[in-house]
Image (tube, rainbow over all chains, first blue to last red; front, top):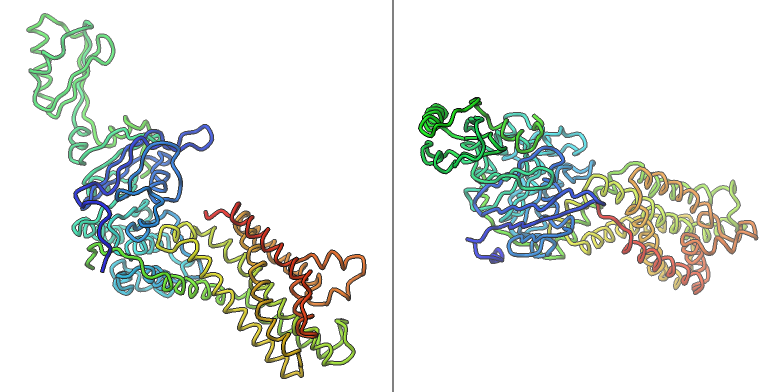
Length: 313
Length: 255
């Protein structure tokens, strides 16, 4: 009964390359790249004003791009064929104040041939007590959950969720996370924005960190965490050392680079080994460091380094 | 946990449009202030203007007054629903982000406008039937052919006023739409709708004839009294409709 897929299921559900969106002279999205697979959760992580929402709105067909390419299930974002396949949760909710959650969900369900039963969605998202209350009287968290329900009511194959956890109490967040995990398990491509590191770490298969409209890092969360949690060793000595020789002596998954003349930066997951190797390599090569210092870093630090901003907590 | 396996498919257009009409109708009916304008005021005025002579609407007898007032109230009903109520509702739909969100669903803009049109026409049908039945009960005896002309005239007037409502709602903020739509209702209602244009000062009559609301009211009065059509008034309505629709197409903002 459902329509056949628009693209082979092994292709990414969403491909964004070199996306640019300007308002006047200001580029809100500036050469952003993003790929989202089916059966995976892709988290777009970044501080407020990083261009996350604008990027999603372009993918949803609500705004047009100034440059770059966006392929949603192999189609241009405004293609009407996508409307039945893509579920969208906007930040502001988009339900008339006098309409109740049940009415809004019934309306949305009738737009699709095989929609979820409204009662099931109300139960899954814990909206039973407010199902017949006008939306304007709901709490922020209840509106968020209604927004999630509206996004999935039509059994979409790609879901965009803009800040699904914002303002949710821990129990509600758990319910939303469980639902997102179920979507992933069912083969749905989920693209969400968040400024919660915890959410990105726990929920996402793929994290894209954006700032000032650019993708500044992306990868599996455990890889980002491994890099992020790695320690940094900085030493100063004469400029122009052949660091490839040092690189070979360092423990696995370490990097070394001369960041400014005479200053060398080593990142490593094994700080103690790295210190030993750096000092012995210096001794072996007749190099005497004028300073060595190290620091343990956290994901927050890395985020701060990458974006220059604190995440809103 | 519910089974969330993807099974995407849009429902048939007729089902989408009817679902949207139902929601728009629910919202229109639920708005208490608008019910005052759409029901209480036309019915109240119909009774006051025909049973008393507080306001001179023309006509020496009660039956003559009824002949003038009933079609005037049809026009007032259309003005309240197609213009004021539609503008305010659409303005707040934009403000709540409703139009943005449903723009991401299988509901196309054509579906949205069709749903709105059905909701508005359903309310207007109820208004006209209620006012007509009340009029008949009081002794209203319209021209039989003119009575048939009420249907196309209401459809034309409704389309014209709706285009102007959407223009207002689609361009300015919801709060401004609310204020302007209510103010315009009062001004337009008292400018050739409730009271025939012929009762206005002679130097403003040519201006009133150019207003879409007055052109609709005059057309309804002429039709139900004489069974005829004044094509210059129809031209005024059509012109406003064309200008309004073109402006909506050009300037309406969905977000």
